[in-house]
Length: 262
Image (cartoon, rainbow, N blue to C red):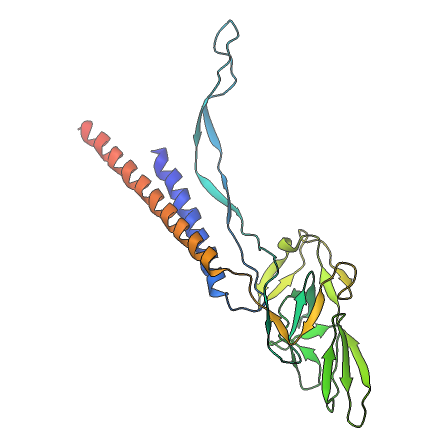
């Protein structure tokens, strides 16, 4: 019976939906995390009686046909790239982007990854790096004897050295922007990679030409809303249960038919 297969596709779709929701909930406290959602489409139809076909020699047209659907499929799990709330940390090397843009990160293999996670540290050479030790691009080195570090909204990094009241500029943080942010490929560690769908990165200075500004001593929180995720989880659970009931009902109908033929 076709209903068994159709309901099975519904159960599989809702199982994947729950998996996406669970990942969102698990990352509620992940800095810079962007929530995902599952998107679905219906599968092909069997046209038993095609709508619009001629039903008589007088030219009568069938106003509604008979179409039998074959279920549902998952087509995408795009990321929702909305701004997360900013949380004050007071740490000099915590930087949040308020607006558009991604930090550029040099990976060990020489490729560039992108992130919204601005929880940076200094390595043994005084370079600004991620929590995994990857260097923030372009490379910025903080002098070991710097008494204070200031990162302004435009990404200019200035330090104050002992015996001086004036600040010295030691680097400039750049951001990258994509025409289709949802097309970036997530690789874990809060990093994304460029893909043909995302388009090539447009590099620029924070707080100019549409790029967001930087906020020192703050971090962008995940854009996951607990109430919304729990609501979606309940809806997915109910949809899964309903599809399971369809399978149970179809099985009972097949059993009844089988008994009648004995």
